[in-house]
Image 1 (cartoon, rainbow, N blue to C red):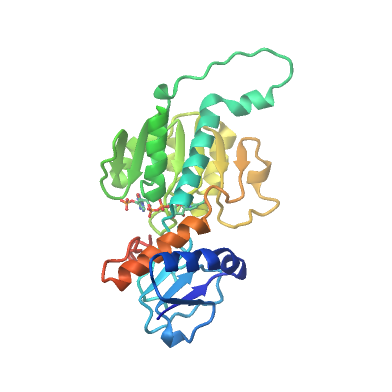
Image 2: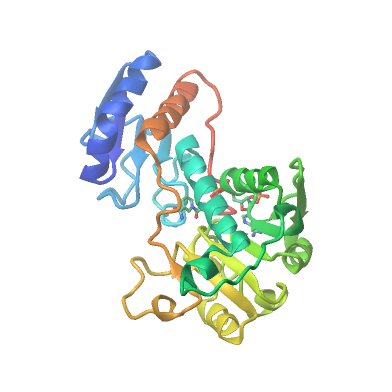
Length: 309
Ligand code: NAP
């Protein structure tokens, strides 16, 4: 019998219980899934940082902690967590991010906001260029960034991407490392941030890097709030250097009522809805990883504690 502890909110338990049980059965895994197990009997922990479980020390037999969330910045800082940690790479979540990013890139590309704002009886033909004449840059070419970049390239955009390590992705101009950032920014008419929140990515978009974007660039941030130095972005929006920003994630969530982003005419706030983990698909990812581990295969999506993602 494999003991799996579900350590997340009660709402998540309602959402995941049946689909996890079904996925365990489909893999012929004999699992006791519970919100309560004796700590020293637990083989795996399905985890979200909103859980009451904050001290991993008593889980001496635990072979892996499986995050329900793609972003693990709130988990990697827990020093009691010494067990292998896997982040969530969920096909449902990836599809959702691809849809959000493609939708907002197309919204900017086609000038949809301008049309919506001018329904006043005046005929103003303003023909957008074809996607092949529009440059989009995606910072972060991981599970989500690479999928979004590939979809944008498929639509026809000129796409550049940036990552820590060198990458080779069909139809994407790939840049990497500190030196590659300038080249990735300088052509970005639309910039998409899909980096994780780590000490190495804090304030990636600051006064200096914003100045490297072409005048009139648009910014999409479905990554994490700390990727942007907020004051610098607001100043760049005020000066017109950045034409518009659509922000899904913030340093403090929910974004406080009085925050300047809510009031700024050139900012769209979306309430961290770009991509949610989908229980139906995420359960298979969790169960597949447990199945692999039980069969002596390496765990997938392991978090590197040194880089923080
Ligand atoms: P991932 O697979 O870990 O990819 C991260 C990417 O960022 C990799 O390409 C990595 O480079 C790059 N990177 C990391 N540190 C870097 C640095 N210092 N300089 C340059 N590139 C760096 O992550 P993912 O699954 O794509 O997810 C990305 C983020 O999206 C998550 O961490 C989370 O914060 C966010 N997210 C948001 C939502 C939402 O609803 N808004 C939902 C899910 C996730 P290498 O490839 O070279 O390692």
